[in-house]
Image 1: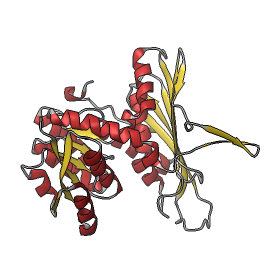
Image 2: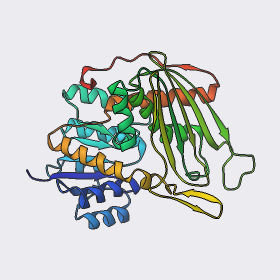
Image 3: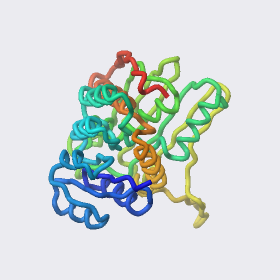
Image 4: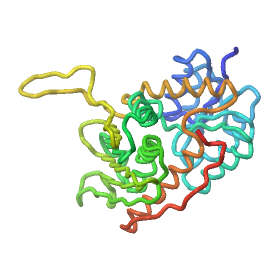
Length: 340
């Protein structure tokens, strides 16, 4: 079988990571086209992977020489490119979030349902992380009994930018934890509440109104709860820990490095510098699974429905922080296409 010919839209950090992994680590695919408005970055990535350059991302999607598309462009462009890929009959891996509005996310779901088959895989790569996948398998096996609660701790090393609003933390970082909560509980979210801790007044290089910590509670169908927190300024590194508490047992993802060191009266274990290092294996597993599914004309893993539901919950959490009260989430009917 010939290699899957992939076009990559967006050559920033995530787009370059995907392009290089596809070119260097996955023999069943090759990157043949890249598009980005930054001509310098586009050229650098194209030359590195031996791909053609496209000024127009819609032209990249439409070209007959591209079989499948990776969407790693700015968040507000994701939905439009995903819809175009679906309408062109081409599988796509769309980085999270699927969209920046619920309306746009629903447009992707509607396009895919109209197409009659799954073509969109959303980049919630934790589903391909060994620890998260093992927790999900344990839950499905029944070994933990009935799910009582899901806990997620998500720690970033430093603020991404001076103006780190609660909305940005929720929609760009906690959205991963929202998907994990749905995956690990097997339940949809019925209502949410949340609060944020701001930086101290006068903190250097941080805009007024920026937050350093967001805590959320998701009330799940069936009575379980998910407790999520994101720390955007840990000062020490990157961590993600997930835990499923069941009626018959509890399981959590393991932490730490391959070795611990005892020195000068302290025990030291390595902490990842940031997310690309922490989830490097998951990204490769994610892309490998996507290429296999796309080569067969479909998609696997997190779906457009998962992307839509993450957007719905994230939007409700932003509202909950703003209003300081619990927010109900309307029940949504899952199309048969997304039953799994």
